[in-house]
Length: 403
Image 1 (cartoon, rainbow, N blue to C red):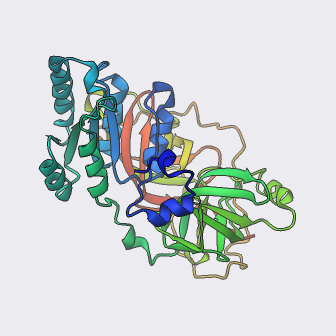
Image 2 (cartoon, rainbow, N blue to C red; image 1 turned 180 degrees about the vertical axis):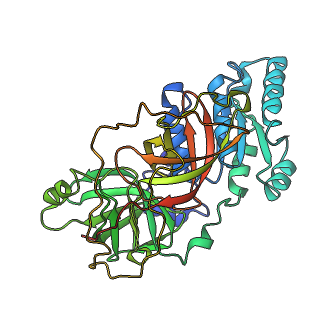
């Protein structure tokens, strides 16, 4: 933790060079109107930990409970920080701690951190089933040193090193323009490593195509680097050619969140239809009138899109492996078309029988195909139900073309 005013204006290069450990905090807000931001943050950034703050003046709100649910459902380790302890009486603080412990016990084992030995011992044995509870006051400083010690000691939860040798995969989260640089893509490296001058495939566009582009510049923590690897959040500037605006028009007017940059060796293919195994988060609110053609919104990685529930026997083309091809070759000359015709089956609804808190569904993206993979986790937070799941099967409607 650096007090910039004490040392003058430090550059990010100086901060990174002088740091023994670098933590990235992603503020996803807690207000109800920003709930989609919370979902996106948990799904797209693969956080090692979720730090949930609770104000004892307000107590546990409905939204705070939902944040707990999401973190637990996505198996993200949780630390709870009870703030503003100086603003309430001891009995009020005790009531809030009891409330928090009662909620956490439904999912994990709550453990209060009260001294340095607790921090060292609990952090060393930190597991997914444990949720640490801190009590702090930024005004009096109570508990702040314990929390800072926790941040210094926590290990990485995600095992990114297992993906270091895989072909590169980068999920695009944000696209913006930088003067004298051009279009810049921000996101997370999920697999492999990415180097300057490396050729990657960008896609899928609205027609399911991927285009070959070269990495021009990479920045991580606002510092220019030559390469990045799995687990790092970074920005990439790509070479869009002499006429970038014309290039952007050729992919439907721009690059959207949810697209990926992927190594050509992967031979990526766009997916319209897929199958998921869902687990309902609230067993007392399992939908009783769920039907085919119902359209829930799916969140997976940086993808957030409306889908349609298909009938079990609706026509699909199952996964078929492809041979390794050069990026300039065409896997299938038939282009993937977008179904823009009116949906004539909306009135042909069939009630889905739900016998337990688990359910297998076949879904189709409504607006454009995405790059998704078997085993990928997803989240549905619909007005009628909430569920977490895993993609168990993907269906390829047609071939892919590199451009």
